[in-house]
Length: 435
Image (cartoon, rainbow, N blue to C red; front, side, top):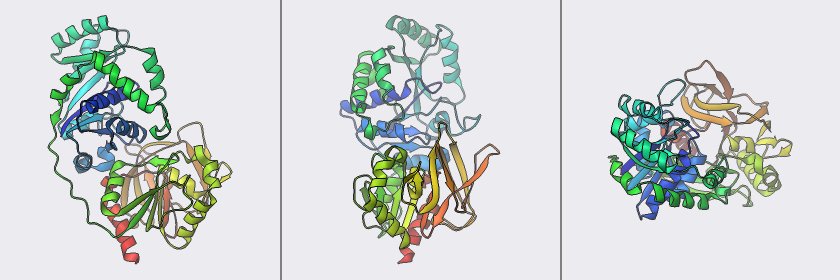
């Protein structure tokens, strides 16, 4: 699989829009293109998947482990692959390059294409770029200049290639209409974004005019990825909530479940009740935006309550956790847990988490550990006893979360099963052994 990473010196550089345009331009050439995002992001992967025509994956060393990086690539194989790097190329956990796009490109031995936006500078850009290119084991092999006029691009291209010896493959002008459209990406899910397809197609058309798309292909290094052998097939039926309210899932989790179990997707918004299943999986999303519609679907709520009371296995993450408490801002929800959710105007938790189980749960026994991440603006006032002891890597911060009722488990942290395979197998073993 010929692969390249699209990166930048920092966040908010227009990297995502350029990546989407490049993916679509390659797809329009008839290439089999897979898309990935470094880090734990859910929303960008949905746009990347829309651009490539197939579900995009995550590459995250902390969430998936080093071996999980190659497995993630193998799960979403294509003839070619574009990886959008999160944040700046060297920005990792805390004040390190650990788990950064740079770190991941080193581990996978793949090249990177730098998106650089000159900001009130001319020749001063040269030593900045050179520092990134020459840093130990940097994989940057090409550059696209962003938000520049053609005359400035030509001047910078000459000096970059002269002093750094790296190819400048084109530029993107600072076009107001493109900037305005890119704002529509925002934090809105692609599933509910009416502008998404037009934005991606227009981005690809603009890049075709000023970027050497065909010149990028020779920079794509062949990543030799072995075929992944999925765990043994289980006689387990899994129902996964998937609609506008719940769409935050790692592709790797879905692939694992689809290849080891019988999976059926359903909508808590639109369907009358959950499918008959052994495991109900309610992932993250924005249930707070659809709280009235969710609350009004009483037959769905009743079917979830019934499954819980009968000892059925239910796992809820983040938005799924919110859905399973009594109410969201006084709008009634499922009510398996005696808690109330409220939205705030700022992030309450953000970043990677280390989780230690304080009691036996459906994901493992007391004392066992998981890795995950949290990103939420809500808080939940809850009466139940927490089962997770959580600490934030490289800091002294810690807190508790994770709640259980019979065979129901719900918590704020998202986990990627590739980095928590013992928990994945423990859950499926427990369901099989219950019969």
